Image (cartoon, rainbow, N blue to C red; front, side, top):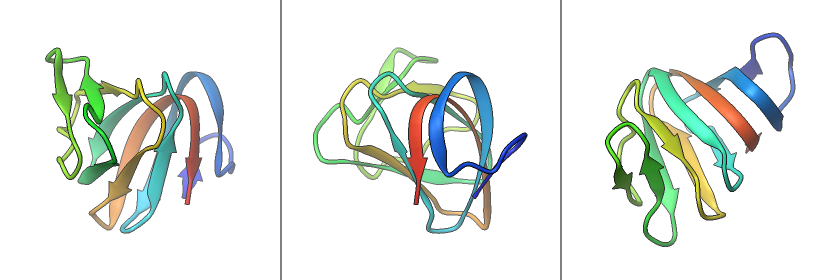
Length: 100
């Protein structure tokens, strides 16, 4: 995992940070965290619905759903993770997150 402009494996960002994941890595989102898929593919893991709010459409993304490129998502409930399903995944992230 790489964060452009740094090397942290998590943190809090007031502005958007580019986070790069490799296949199988996960991004755990804190409540209020925003994420946008820019490169690659990724799916959501969430134990309750709604998983994430799709701010771009006003809809929701639930467990197992694929993130749509260039849509802005927000975590409004704890325990939401995004898993990289491509060799290289780039996300814009704002808020609290950790990578594993």
